[in-house]
Each structure stands twice: as structure tokens, then as C-alpha cells.
Image 1 (cartoon, rainbow, N blue to C red):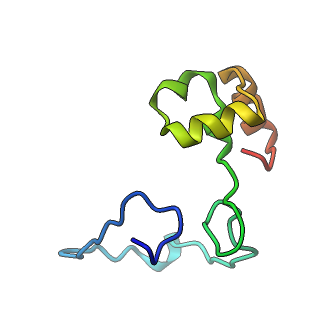
Image 2: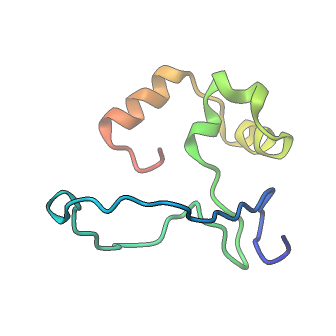
Length: 90
């Protein structure tokens, strides 16, 4: 666990079966940038925006709930509006 900064759990998955889809249905992928939500050395990971939603406060880990309180708790309607407008903080 010490190898994975801020991890609470590490899950190992073993592939037992797979289905290869027709290539025409697989979109081309180009990585534009890394996610700001992936933990990195030497900096605190950005709090995921959904953790600010009022409806999820009672199920968050204590440390995440504290971070959300510091940023601000928002109603679900505000969160939905951010998603619909493509707000990058979502």
C-alpha cells in the first residue's frame, strides 16, 4: 500500500475471459493529459468534484468530507449543471 499514495485499497484483477470487439466499434484513443485526480508524489490530490455534493456527505470518508467542507458543499442541481455545461471541475 505504501507504493500507492493515498490508496485505501488495492485491487488485483485476473482476466479469465475476454471478448474482442469488432475493430470498427473501437474508437481511436489519444491521451491528451493525465487526470488531476490521479495521486502523484509531492502534491495533494485534487478533491473529486462529486464529493462536494450535499447528498453524498454521509457516505464519504471522514478526510474527504472535511476537504469538501473546506471547499464548499453544493446541491445536486449545481453539480448536474456543471456536468451539463462541461465544467472541468466535475
